[in-house]
Image (tube, rainbow, N blue to C red; front, top):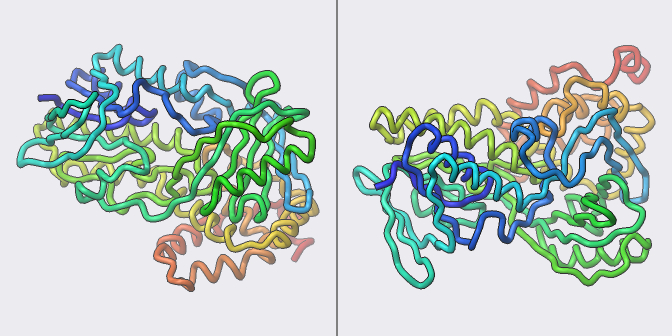
Length: 423
């Protein structure tokens, strides 16, 4: 019997496996694909904090110190720092590197292994799989669910289901005249969300978008727009799509079980990025599981510490991000254009760059200050207050209200002299 079975060899799963194996525990990782990094659909762009956390070992395609935001009517806001703020990683190589690291510590990886069912007994977990047509049963004292947002295991094991999703679509294609990250907002192209072009190597770039419905149809329209603009030569490409959870599970632990990464919904609601948050939660999970294994107690009570730890780190960030996500989805293109104009007219972009709250990986602080700016509140106040009052049956209104009250007490995202002039 293993100490821990990890389902999924993505970044979060391999991170947990590496940490536990390094501490001397017997770890087995079950991965449905033929190798780590296979069938990945992810831009792989991470902030400098995440890159440092990876120890500089990840394969970098390009660093980014600037980004251009484009409004529906073509208004442009460009942010640039002197040093790199983000790194575009070779996403398959990242998965391979993390899996190899875990294996070097002694974790056993089983590929081409489809998990059909997992069940608890009084003392351990049994996982039933099919591998190359052969049924197998694996047993362990504990189970880590790192199997992505589409897994049904969280529901079958009593952790519930992820409740809110978007869909991301992406391809890698040759582009013309695009040298930096470009993000577009348009309800015609990506209703309620955004599109992106992220240069990688040479003239290649990752082109993608997020929306809730008809992702392939909207993505085709986006590619056609780029072709008409002369930014790409052809719309013929292989498109990948994946579900993106926008809210975490209500509970990410149970007797002998924890869920991490996309499977737990530990993803930025603003951008859909989940690599860094998944790694942070994986570290918390590994530490709690190590203590539980040594104590011989993998009960729900013992593992509840994992939930407390990751929510202390990410809870308010996820609530603030989700509030802003819901508010943004209610905006029309004219309001988005007006936001761009307000940002430029009030130098909010320049002030944000110089704010200590500015971070690629942590959005809550800058969002709270931005909402508190008089020019932004004038455009968004009614929408935000409507969400916080619970109109429309918003189940997170109370949680968001607690978070946002704290954020809105923060120093506004504007110098005092400018605040006085605007009031």
